[in-house]
Structures are given as C-alpha cells and as structure tokens.
Image 1 (spheres, rainbow, N blue to C red):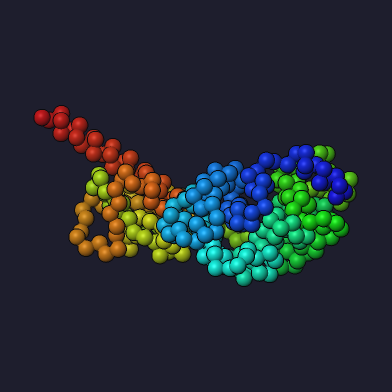
Image 2: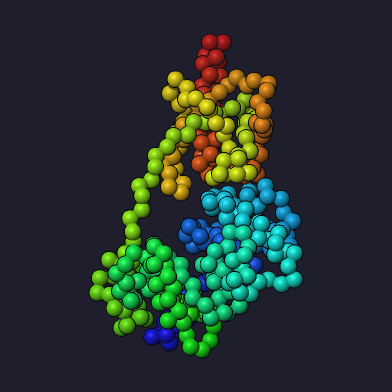
Length: 334
C-alpha cells in the first residue's frame, strides 16, 4: 500500500514551488500561508513573499507595515505577525530548530506546523495531519467518531503514525498523503477507483467520513464606519482591533446615524458574519485624534484588510460619481 501511494504521488503530484526546496524558512512560510487558505491563492503570494523576504534575516529586519502590506488579501493577519515574530527569534539562534518540540516554542507555531516543517525540510519521520490527511485517514480506517475533538485528533495522529514507512523519512510519505486528499480523496465525489489505497480502504460510504461535531452557527453583527474623503485624501485609522491590529481601517462610528448608509460590505471572520455599513462624512473637524490622511493614489501601497478595501473602493467610486453628477448639473445651468 505504501509503495502504491508513493509511486502515485511521484507520477501525479502537483508541481508546487515549496516542493522544490528543503529550506526550512521557505517551507515554514508556505505552511503558514496554507493555513485556512487554498493552494491556488497561496501560489499568487508565495513567490512574491520569497522575493521580498528571501530569508529569515531580511524578514526579521522588515517593518511590520511592509509585512502586512504584502500579506493583504490572504486574511487572518495574525499569521503574518506571528511569522514576523518567529523570524525575529530565529535570527538570534545559531541554527534553525530541527525538532517539533523546539519549533513549538516559537510564537504561533502549533503541532501541525512544527511537524510539517521538520518532515518536509529535514525529512524527519513524523506524522503530519492536515484537513486533507484527516479525511484520508478517517476513510481509510472507517473512523466513526468526530475528528474535530480532542479524542478524534489523538486517534488520527495514532493512525498517521501507524502508516509511517518503516524505512525512510517523512517528506515523500506525508506529501503523498496530503496530495491524495487534495486530488483523489475529495470531500465530495471522491475518485475511489483511481485511489492507490483503494484496496485497503475500509469505508463503504466515503462521503459519510469524516464525521464532525457540529459547529456553532455564526453570530451576526453590525459594524458602523465613516468614510472621510475630500476627493484627494482619505482619512483612515491604524487598527487596534483584534482582527486587524496594525492595519489601516475606516474609523468607527460610535452611534448609527439615522439616515440610510451609503454602502454595505458583508464578510465572515472567525465565528462572525459581519454587515459593515458605511456613511459618508464630508465635513472634517480639525481634531481627529489618531486619524491619518492618506492620498488616494497611495492606497495600493497601504496595508488595508480586504473588507475595508472593498468598502473604500465602493465609496470612492460613489464619491467620484456624485462629484461628476454635481459638476454636470452646474454646467447645465451656466
């Protein structure tokens, strides 16, 4: 079974840039980016990141603003901050940590990331269990219990250990299992007849695995923001909110205005569904505290979270359309 899996991967595995390196820093970057993010999206960011921050030392010396700016669009910005913090710690060490125990001492590095880095960078024989591998294991062993529990996570790890090759390391084996989950053992309509592990698979109902404990329904909340713009400048504030610490966002309105909002942006984040409503404020007071003036033409170079960037873009378009319509009306009376 092991031989069939490895042969399948060597023939059908995707050509991904982080599979062409054993540089632990590059692999760490890829693994952090791949958390909660699809491979196709990460492909657009990984190469740019490695060009801008080619090694630990360069990333460690970079200002946080530059790190967050390059991360725009990937979401979950704490990943970028943790990666930045990790680089600062690693830059002070004599060598890159080579064991999961050492890696887990670093900020934001959990068991999965620690195991993935040592397996793919150093070919250490350790189990790696991501969502794809969890799905493969739950079907292969026909595991009937929820996998998103403490007991389920422990059992999956034991299953993964039982499949580790007696000889050799963890790079090829874990890469193959991961790829099998991505290409063959899909969440819906798995391609069982093409699976190299089909003969040994115990489940007769693959789409019923993995079993998961139901998640709580997302909580719906409203967010009220102000759009302050004079046609050339926009006023933003550096966030201290837990979702977007350090990023530039639209300022918060403490009370919802009585008039209808000018724009709405819907988005989901963690366990919330957010309806962000935006009102245009044309009159600017002198004392705006922490507000920062930013030229509209410089917005692409400013780290703004995607929902706020969408709101800003919609409001700017509305602002210019409104200004143009006013100019046309004035011209018709001249």
